[in-house]
Length: 356
Image (tube, rainbow, N blue to C red):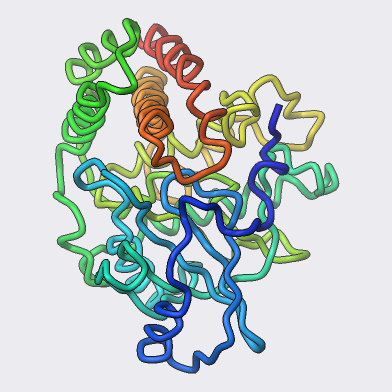
């Protein structure tokens, strides 16, 4: 089995399918990235399921490049321009993000659009049990994640120039329709009976009430860079799925870690939380509610939010499966991810039954 650490940590030589004209990139950076000077060495990060991500190394500084993958892409997917925009907007606040140095939407430079951002040095935890942290210190790391997502949801989109970053209202209705459409239209990846049931059930069972905030869309411990020695988040990564949406959808996605098997993405499924010094899911939810000044969420509503998110992640993994079949998957271990699609559908179905 490929572990999260083995599969994602570090860099590798650029994979054959993701090679590009490095001299063309250098020429672009000279004219568009302040302070840049070659020579340049390019390596590819092992992680990154959707958008190929590279480490750019010079004699004085390192950068990160995120690009659209080559090949035929689904409409609206791999929106690196949106990633660059939200990173730049949040960079005007105290929220922890990497600095963006430049965005290039000219496909003639390296074959697809891309952006260059700061290389933030720190720790990434690919295992949600935080095994490298002493038992007595783990709660502080979870509290830091909780505080970070709560602070994101408290940012007024209009104040950072993101009032048009997504459509306000009816988030669940629109997202369920989007991911259902992507699932149904990806003929290469095929259909699943249980997934079809979720496509039918979800839009008919959306909880009452609506609100809008900036949402990350993929808020997990392995999408954060922590301080080298302190329980502090230095940068939140991978904003491809960010938009304006319902904050409770975003939080429930993050909180799926409490139920997620660790062989899919960073998860605590089956772990003894008390023995590990990690807060319970209920306590974690309560802390978020306190930080965002909201009443505790009903069990039925929370079960829906979790169901929606397992469905959404299943749809994403279904898309990875399709890209593997088409030969456009960005990550070397995308095939392993694609195999997890049935497990995610089963978890969504289990959570759905808790709503009934």
